[in-house]
Structures are given as structure tokens and as C-alpha cells.
Image (cartoon, rainbow, N blue to C red; front, side, top):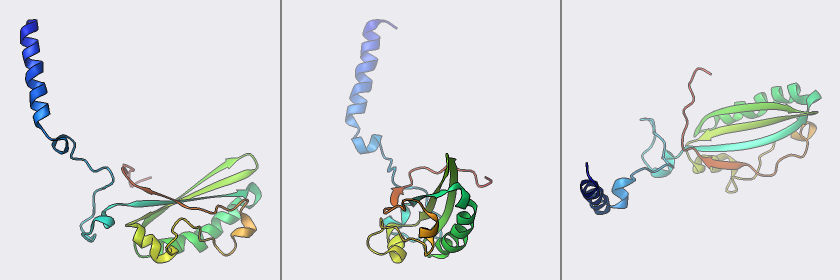
Length: 153
């Protein structure tokens, strides 16, 4: 292919691309994830929301706190309408054990139903002050853009 032919091909491609609208080229809405068939049809319910809370406890109290967290917190979270599941992460950093709880929700409205209008305000467990060092004041929320975990973890 000579340089004239190459220029012709490039010019033709540029004309083709310029004739397409931007929405035709990029029709991806990254804030939406696949919706199971049993979900309602409104757009807010189609965005899965991850609610992330973090707390720290002395290593000596970590096992006891984890048991308490499961019984008093995780069991309650899983029973709330609109909850899609929960994960608990734990790591030791020196003399401190850090916990991260990520719960998944159908919508921010589902979170408001149990947390109130200020969904970023932490809803502490009754005995958190016995265990936690510098309790968190805020919870973070993220729209889930991608979740490719395998179910058999």
C-alpha cells in the first residue's frame, strides 16, 4: 500500500468516526451492574451500593470483638430488607487489629430505611466502646462498578 492509499484509508476512517455520535461510540453506563430478574424496575434499584465501615481494636480483644460483631452486627445487617450480602475483612497491624465490613445494598434508599437520612453516620453497636479504639464517625458508600468474585471463596 502506498502513502496515497494509506492517507485515503485514514481519511475515510476519520469521516466514518466523525459521523457517529459520541453516544453511539460509548454506550456504557459504568454505574449500572447486571440486575437479577427479581429486582424492581426503577433505576435507583439497579445500582448496587457498597457500604464500608472500618474499626480498630487491640489484638488482645480481636477474637472476642469478631464474635460480637458477627452476633450483634452482621446477623442484623443480613436480615435488613435490601441487603445483598456482607463481607468482613481483618488484618493485624502491630498491636492493633483492623476490621473492615463491606455490606452490599440494592439502593441508598434501602440503607436509609435502617440508618436514617444521614446514611454516612455510623450506627454503633451497643458494646463498641468496650472494644474499639478511635471509633469511626462516618461510613463510606460506593457504587459497585464491577464485581467479578467467584462464589466459591
